[in-house]
Length: 187
Image 1 (cartoon, helix red, strand yellow):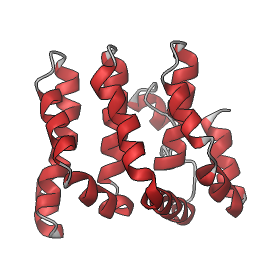
Image 2 (image 1 turned 90 degrees about the vertical axis):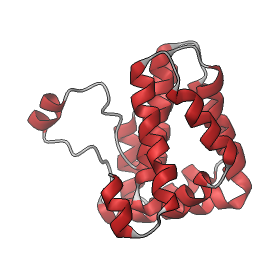
Image 3 (image 1 turned 180 degrees about the vertical axis):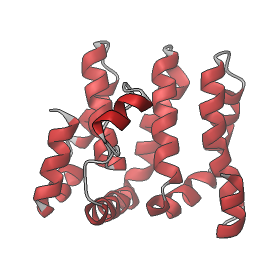
Image 4 (image 1 turned 45 degrees about the vertical axis):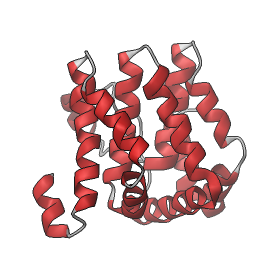
């Protein structure tokens, strides 16, 4: 399934968001992300990005290509994005948060491919910096193991991984200063 089609489905039908998020098949997407077939893994990752961050996978396009097409990177209206992110937050809070972070972090701990690590880190950063996921980011930043993992990634050999890990690392710092004025100075 293409991410654009999933986005259109979520936009048109209010109950689709519930069905996609509450389905036990959501965990299968994480399994498909581990596929050795690049196409399958990339498609699964794009679908997860639509489900969590309500946006298309636009990482393959350059900034100029996006400007020419006029894409904003979102497949849902702002109201639908808020509703959908609230559904996902509720899903995370219902005993799924630990497993979700564990699945995501498994890519960062074991994956050999720097491209996959960068993609997971970008996904994580996009999710945690979203104002809709503020409380999720606060809970994420309070777990010492998450901080240790980001600190290990700051020491990676690949400088691109270091840069993106630093972006996620800033979330820990921002959560230490929850005042909006202090947070805005960090970004």
